[in-house]
Picture: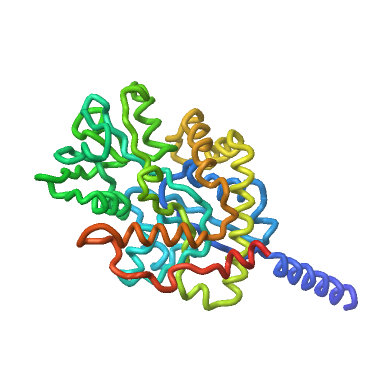
Length: 328
């Protein structure tokens, strides 16, 4: 009997220890497919930074048919990556989402034009066809055109070509300019055979219409739960550790991304190049949202013309509570 009780007690203690060591589950929904744009999260998982924070993190890739905000609201994720313009627009439309951290300090968005089209400055946009992404990605472009006083319905303004997630409209000369990111589509144009000398690029950062990209967002309800707040702080702390490691070790980070790409669609050359460019955008960020950057984004979205992206100053759209806990 004594032996049976001892065995039972040992088993109970082992079970209790296992329960005590069980990591907290957390799901992250990415804005797009697995690529170096999200390297910090894959690095944090691969290097055990999430494990160190007692987190079991599931990373869900995005795609053309996935709306991160809908996944978040539907309970399919605890945290999402999104651009601030689309997040603030969704919030104004009723989605209770809040920015808890901002790993990206700078914008990588550009308009890339064929030099032979004759577009040399924004003054040359009128009468042109410009490729633009939609599904929330159009807001920075629309704000820019509004600030220039250029309509987007053709005629005396610009004709907007609803651009797919490729660079074909430029290569096939269906558009004078297309939307590109410094770390992705621009290099697809180069890989297709065009040279930098054949292109004219307009970085949103340089045009004074830069808006924040790739922030971390949660539902307001998550912030009402102290246990969830504490879990999110651990997640942000580990994620930023992953981002800083990726910045310092870009080639290794790119290879970690490739190992997690289940589609096999990415190439080593492209991911290493992408990681090098992405590192420039996360540089200078410790994860905490800079309120001056936030204010600039809001001003851009509210400014210029009679049809702004958002119509009023957002209230409660961000919090420092999570990064304050994570950084301290």
